[in-house]
Length: 284
Image (cartoon, rainbow, N blue to C red; front, top):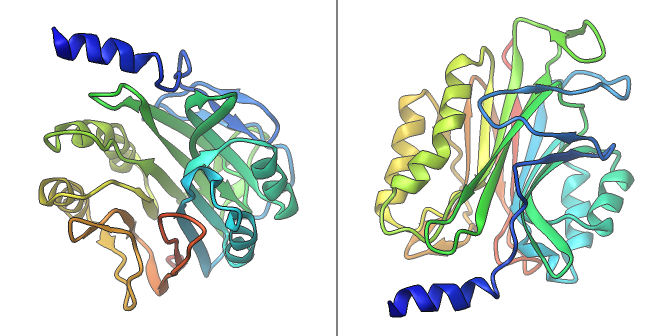
């Protein structure tokens, strides 16, 4: 009874979640496709295909609470073709950043708090052809964690129409913020499940990046073993500056069907997490 009363009182102060999963892009278009069901994206610009080599920036941006976030994000983004952010506050400053860097983006809102929206954000220099998202509630707080899957044409892709592409292969990028407050790894396993279905049906290279909240051996094993069984490699960093909790890193970049060229783990005080900047070559 005491626990029930505590949760009721706590709920008055928790962030409010959207009524349903919604992806928003740079044109303020809304998409409601829950992974693994992909939505075709209306092509709004003439876009090149993703070429080789290319770089991915992954960063939990800590809700843009540190005043240095904008300077550092612009610095690192200038070196990146794909950007996956977690704990991203969807405000005019983030929109301005995307416009300044000439990036297209998707934001999947997890919750609203004090008139601001937060979630994961995926940006790119090449416009995505398809996208979907997920929203998975924390078992205790019920405040969701979100994810986004996007598909990009690669070098030999030919645009067929404004809403679809024709290619033997494309790049699948998955950006995930893992559920955190759980006693077991089962909720994290369930959160990843829709993306495993996407992985099984995708013909082409794949990147999976994000803050997986892998602070326990069980959670780490669940993520790494599952993805290794699907043929993924985990990016390793010679000078590893990733956030460590209970001796384990929370942020990861996994890849399949790509060649790793360079991996950087960058120290910063612009967030409680440090970013990863990784360069890959596409298959020939």
